[in-house]
Image (cartoon, rainbow, N blue to C red):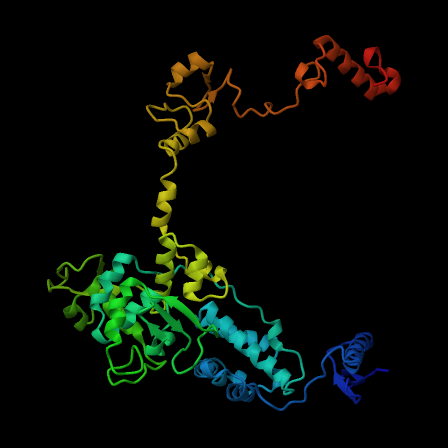
Length: 498
């Protein structure tokens, strides 16, 4: 049975904890009644812990930094260890959060660190990734009995990641790009576009995995690991355009298809992004050019002009020739894989076959992530609209239709549309010009009047179950009103009792 007492102005609650030990807890209660209520809550929580319904509070003296080090050394998958160590070192191990004891690592403390990352312009996907890693760290610690409390990351809300449209290359741009790639990288880039393989899969590709005679490639390893990101081995066909590149790469004596010139494997630290940006600039696949005056820059008054071309221009301040600097498109090397999927989908290949080529487990991943269809792919759909539909819809009311052609869509939306002018339309259809720019329709039944959809009157023949006459309809109306006002005794005539 819990109890409360006051000491030096502070109310304490003495409760038997889930471990069976009695302990006093200082509370924030200002009255004895509040202290009793808090003590009862603590007692109920301790009782649930004794019955195994809630986990016991951990007495661990480990810090979050030590737990992260244990996970990196003991539980982190080997292919991801280097990247996750870099992530945790930057965002956790070098911050005050790493020195917190595990019982003090709460959802609020972790969320505060994530908000700091957001203030430092970290992307929502990066914030969510750190949250997922820390969640995994605590989950593995619970299974290893290093932590017996609740997972604090359960109370941290993930950030909303906006969907981005990746930039990809068109078919003619691929042919424009490859000649500007260095010789020792050209076949590597061509294979990335023609197969959709990842960087690690290309670096670890061996000659025994390539069968040019039967025209397929076995994708089953990434770098030095005998497994891919998806954890499975697949065979993909060799595109005819890739055969010359593969034949040239297979002539070397090395075991690898795309090694360094000295025969070594390209390491995970290899950055083809710089090669791609340089090739894009040389191929003219840019978003524009920054024209800079070097003389003004050296004097501390830089003059930079952005233009769509690299034409020769002069500085308006000093007259010196401006130096154009290309601004390459923001493509990553992984976007070449996006290019493969987009080109296949754009050429009418169904999503399920594209999924098998990219080796995704779910076809939805293929459509949502790699189907970057741009506005040009929608132009053909928009072209199916009948001619003149947009002109008629956008014309102000009462303006002459002129010689616009009325297609099926116009006929369906505007049944009374005609080639007549307002004056002739008034004579033909009974329309009259109202004040302002509105036309009042007299005899047309397609107008937007509010009474057009009303139920027909009872005396109308088509409103009755049988073809009653107009006189009988009036008798029915009189009888109905009398029934409502005075009861059944007020119902007279042939409709009485009905």
